[in-house]
Length: 399
Ligand SMILES: NC(=O)c1ccc[n+]([C@@H]2O[C@H](COP(=O)([O-])OP(=O)(O)OC[C@H]3O[C@@H](n4cnc5c(N)ncnc54)[C@H](O)[C@@H]3O)[C@@H](O)[C@H]2O)c1
Image 1 (cartoon, rainbow, N blue to C red):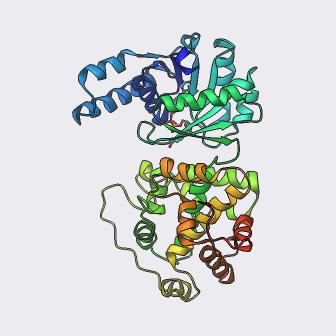
Image 2: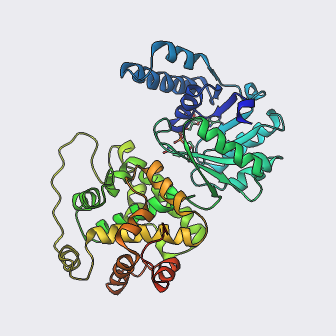
Image 3: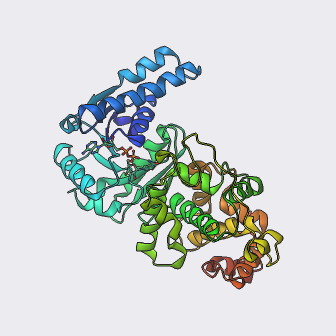
């Protein structure tokens, strides 16, 4: 079915949209990229051109391929130019008022058969779909940053999305070289609902002086081989984005696990947003940073010595594993999808369920109990974990 069309629209050519234009054009689609005004359009076009020029300089693309790709892209400030698009991806700022304006307009401009996809990270795809007269043809297509590099695309299906639309969105994702995971319209989808509470836990550990920022970051990279530590990652993602995800998780689930760390909220209020503002948990202004003192309080010492039956790596990673088990147990994600999301969306060398199976459900349950006994009460074991243990199993994958 995907082969039947080749005209794609992308609305909003910022951080995500410019990368999405590139990905579609590279895969052979004809793309119309639409921006709000000439200045933003120039910025979006420069972003695409620079990215392709970089690929040529690295020898990953020939000059002929580069000009063929650019030849497939039309840049415009007129949404009306999407009147013949078969598939439109919206990547405008994460504000419902802007999405409303775009979707009501796209619904008017595009033929009834056009699929309208949103790249939203935290808004309700169901609400966005309800703004149109074609809720069955509206789907989430959640790319990861940077879009040309990260392999995961979450295909977000609402209760009203037609099965054909979900299937087609998955096929489109595959045709542009991505690995799709189909998920329901739930706060944080899969990857952010797992990643951001883990970052939030690390911020709480830092705030409560359980460890220094360097200890927190290197513990995780060394013990689990994650590409970077959670505080470095928070700075990269943007502390405002992390806070927004925590707040939507809290709004939807109202569980203490999803209460944003007070320090996270204060840093956002102070404009310390991470790399993009030049200051987050680390300084990006180029100024010399004084070495942080290693905390020496009683809890920090107990965690460092493993006196309560867990160490810093356990404190950071085991609740993260438990969240993935809970998500699988609730039927929201399959084991495969939960692991694919973290491997292809967050660059993890192994999925969280793989980590569970390697470590053993009994060991994970023991650490969670030790954490709760030591007062970290928000880490309650997922029901599926208890079920596994009662069934005498230590792994979730059966084979
Ligand atoms: N940045 C990320 O890491 C990331 C990751 C996944 C998903 N997302 C989601 O992608 C979407 C875009 O995020 P972003 O980070 O690229 O934002 P951004 O601010 O970098 O880009 C948004 C672009 O939309 C343009 N725009 C604003 N109003 C418009 C309109 N009415 N018509 C056309 N263009 C308009 C702006 O000029 C800007 O260039 C959001 O929904 C966000 O949640 C972001």
